[in-house]
Image (cartoon, rainbow, N blue to C red; front, side, top):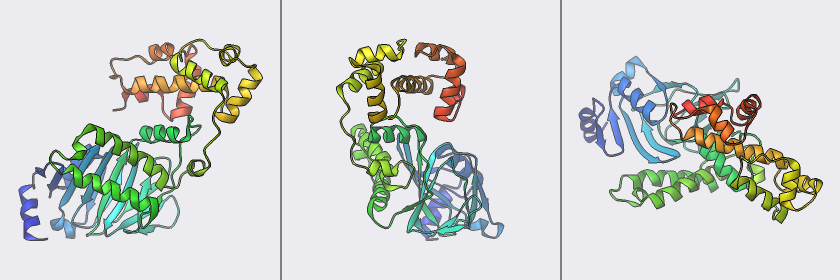
Length: 338
């Protein structure tokens, strides 16, 4: 370690920030605590023989739905963590680490490819090399799903499933990794562009959409398909009415009246242009409104039953089943989540 780095580490031995956005410590316990705050609960195991070389350095930028970090440990380690509940992208900037998905043979990843951890896949990480340094990006699942819906122009039927690797040597993968790295550089600039909410918000959206275009996932073919035909006016009328008043007690006949077409014509148009029936679209909009309200309400300031009734769900049993099937968790879990 260079003398300047050693001095910096010594000054930060108790976990003090070296400068805004940068944290350095020699304490394994302190490093685990900071990583848990920045990302999620993580266990660090340092080989006893190399413990004296342990120096955790974290350079972090907060972009709303994304947390971008440059992380290194100064020595070989093993990592372990609980179910993260986020998408997490690791791009080696130097060195590498081991990756294993389920019972598949382990793979050594290097600076030529990144890894995306999808909570729906059984992926484990092991044996960081002593010189390993990674760009670690935590990404909000719900934000990714919303951006995917925007790109597709319709609600998702199922959550996307991501393949574990990203080629960062060329094309969209290289561009995305470079843009994420730039955010770290600019975050350290006093009064820089990323400290302007307008710029930060646009970069956040660009990185979310860019991730969907730079990775392989279950919706990738649909994103690359030709744009769909313009939706008929009848479909637009129904969608606008439902979005404006989702809690109304709609039935299929009422929606056909709003569309000013026959019920059969409306159902066929919705299946062709929206991918679901008109009443399924009503349910989807209502579920999204419920989820948004639960996520933005304090746990002691909202009641799941009241919120469900507010958005038009009269049968709580069916509501709970549909909610869990759609989002992979119960309404109460959403309300209690940070």
